[in-house]
Image (spheres, rainbow, N blue to C red):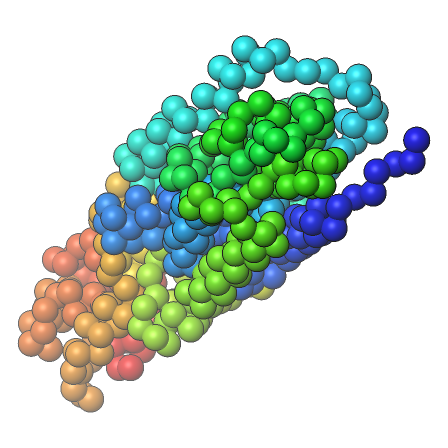
Amino acid sequence: MAKAKLAPVQLARRITLGTILVVLTIITILHQKLQGIPTIDSLCPFGGFEALLKFVQGGEMIKKLEPGTLVLAGGIVALGIVLSRFFCGWFCAFGALQGIFGWIGKKLFGRNRPVMPAKLDRYLRWIKYPLLVAIIYFTWKAGDLVIRPYDPWATYGHLSAGFEAVWGEFAVGLVLLVASLLLSVVYDRAFCKYLCPLGAVNAILGRVPLFRIKREKSTCISCSKCDRSCPMNLDVSKPDAINDPECIGCMECVTACPTKKNSLIPTLGGKAVKLGLVIALGFAIYAVTEIAANVAGLAPKPLTQLAAEGKLKVADIKGSTTWEMLGESFGIELEKIYRETGVSMAKVPRMTMLKDTAKLGYPDFTPDAARIAVAKILGLPYTPENEGDMKSEVVAPASATTVATATTVAKSLVVPADFALEGTMTIDQVAAALKASPEAVIAKLGLPADIARDKPLRDMKDQYGYTMPDLKDRIKK
């Protein structure tokens, strides 16, 4: 028997999914090597829903996400309302990855692939809904990407960093990634069916009955070919319409139907439409979303640009930030940052990305250590990702305070040309002599906000890592 030719629609779908998977894979590899490349977290639409929770809570973005991620989430909502889980069937890179393993399974087992017991399958599909609720709850409480260490897609995006790095940060996610792909060999799209929180969101949105596939009883021959072709294992050949929220709009059933008499008809708002119109509509919504997301920003702005715009915050420091850029952007002597973090310049060159520092003899170092150090040196508020890592002298709840704020305060301080800073002077004495506030003096000298104001400056130089010639130079600038 001749092998059935793949329908043009399905060829287009596979090319689309494959292209998206390849492009995102390349981006994740480049992110490990270069600056200004979006993170895998920013490229995942579900991150937008998590970012929205944080934004509503305090008006800030989650550290690893960008404004464009919110736009992606908005596009998914629009696509979900109009075409249900169309994103899952046509644009989801992780769905494409599972599809590859499903194809491998079909080649290995053919028609002898195991079948998930119907009753068990029905119960397992409910797991993703309480999982979604749990993610929303804990994200709201923590204000961070709580799902990240367990996310198989985020794990995939970091594979190019090496096994040691992935296992250290994504041990559970790696186990779920391997399990999901292996399970997809025998059960199509296992993660999509049972665990995907974005799939749960789309399924909920899909309850709005705009897009449906209706079955024409008069022309249906009940061959069940549509049932066998469905990657989500839905019952297509019996109901009058496919109302199941698990439908991912892949159109496999439509293109597999052998009658050629429109037995399975795509509909929008209850009206029959051409298959091409549904696909074109889905692509149009997705294209507009991607364009708008890129305009809003999916990649982090360089720190130097944020500094020039007066919008630089400690939280803007990324793992891809180099040590040299860190000092240049925040106007801090590089040696001081190294000293504050306990990192040796001899071991870690200034052009090293922060996230690569751990590989150079500092296994416990994280980019957040650099954020804490900068916050302490400049006296700016910052809440560490892990508050247990924050030394008691690093004060401050998080806020939108920028480096520009400290810079503005420092520049507002007028220092007479004949003023001489002495090591015997205290912060309060300097402030009194200059008729300024102690905060302005501290900002001018680039000292931590919590430095003692009643102790001679020379007595604290070892504790805070400055020299008197350095302070004298700063006060004159």
